[in-house]
Length: 288
Image (cartoon, rainbow, N blue to C red):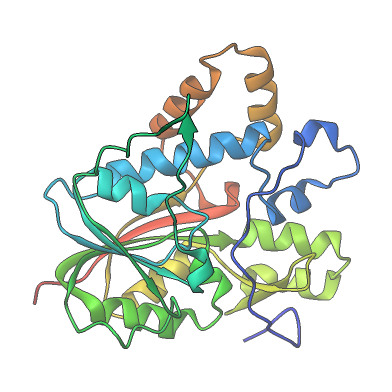
């Protein structure tokens, strides 16, 4: 193992900030752009739209019980319940629980929203330690939003995920790729670490905020999934379009540019994982 830093402080889930478009921040490096999500930038609006479409295509057609480990910043739980699934989502603290806010329109209380087809239950707990759940109780687990890269003991986390999945159950996960790790190392002048990044068994990369992330190649992620007893269905980059390409097309493409870009991304052919900053994977627990 060749880590790129001596310390390994866990990183909090990235929060959507209120920034300006990346094009208006000339001093912000390309790698730093991916270190903090910016809800107002064209690229991140595209990124989350792609993530939502990928989740919708991954969710089982038959309603089932889903465990969401992705954190409150990622809206997969709401999407899954809208598709008819019963979802248990883990939150780091009670303060992160979703609350209904009563608002008044013309002096009258706003009518409650229409209920989802599925149920959403919020549970406070450590996303990577699942002792409260029995074995084989979930049809699917969603570990998006880079959660397995931010919890550095990925093997232990995946072992718990396998335990709570029923035979035939599936997991959808997203991790940081080596291409992002190498970009961050280069910007921090970590040249000795960078020279070994592609061949390292475990690559731990310091982020600008002082936290640590674990980065993977597609082959490493597939090998890890197989080691914990999962059958890999596929691995691919979350996106293959660059931030600069998305910014340009969103600026010049009119009101439907976002929809066209998402359709283009979803139709893209399988690509080498090194072209993407994040790797998306789907795996299944064997039935026997």
